Length: 287
Ligand code: HMG
Ligand code: MG
Image (cartoon, rainbow, N blue to C red; front, side):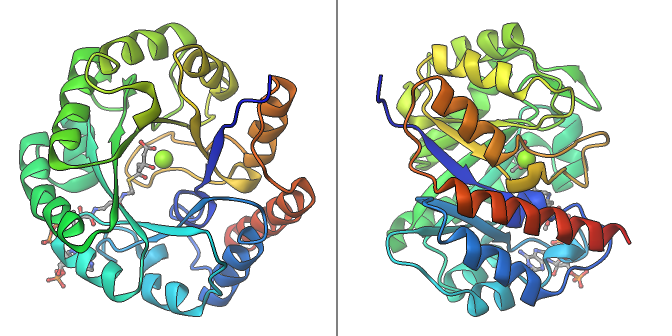
């Protein structure tokens, strides 16, 4: 088998957003520049969110301005509202992502809004991105388990994914934010979401808190998904999801997908160097 899969690199954004000590922009730029040599199609660089909510990414514009763009890579960012979108545009983002929650508890904690309010706030962002011809991704968080509300009903995930699709998201990334999903719960969730969107418009976004990310990737592969989010060095965690650990490590996921016969196109030498760099950043941040 030589089927292609895409690994979407999240390290600079999801990987670093949770670090307590502020990491200098220059070090983030060095990481993005190294990742740009790694063979990715897309790299999520940062978020244009409220710096009161995520102080670590307050330097979003500086990082975007300082990195060296490599041809053929789409540099993506997260935008929670129109203000973030406008800043992302000004910074030259090639792709923006809007994000919503499948549970009310996490929506309140992460966005200070109900699901309905957050979707209302995101609609003008989606409209603007489409008018500007900017690629638009949507995230649904806590797709199997929520730290506040417990297990997430699959129908609820499908409903929020459909709402993001209706707003114009080309692709929806399904986030196991706290890494508590199991192959059975992931499969049940996908079964519901696949009634709304085809597999080629879905991505799997697995945090590895319980060490089941690769099992959940396998469950998603079996359902036809071929896009997976990951962070070099397994960095990450969401500041508003207690217990959230890192994204599945890019190097681990890439090795797993290769062993399963998929082609991901990443340069493993660069990926290993980037993983070392990412871990060192975290080491500094923990110091
Ligand atoms: P709020 O406090 O309800 O709204 O936050 P606000 O409008 O009152 O804004 C608060 C302050 O932030 C104000 O400043 C705004 O001006 C400012 P003040 O007037 O008090 O000085 N502000 C901004 N500043 C810069 N850029 C902006 C912006 N917006 C407001 N875009 C809000 C509501 C949505 C803004 C807030 O809740 C927020 O930013 N949340 C983002 C939280 C976040 O980034 N979480 C992590 C990313 S999601 C994730 O990790 C999950 C994912 O990986 C998938 C998965 O794993 O499931 C994607
Ligand atoms: Mg995440």
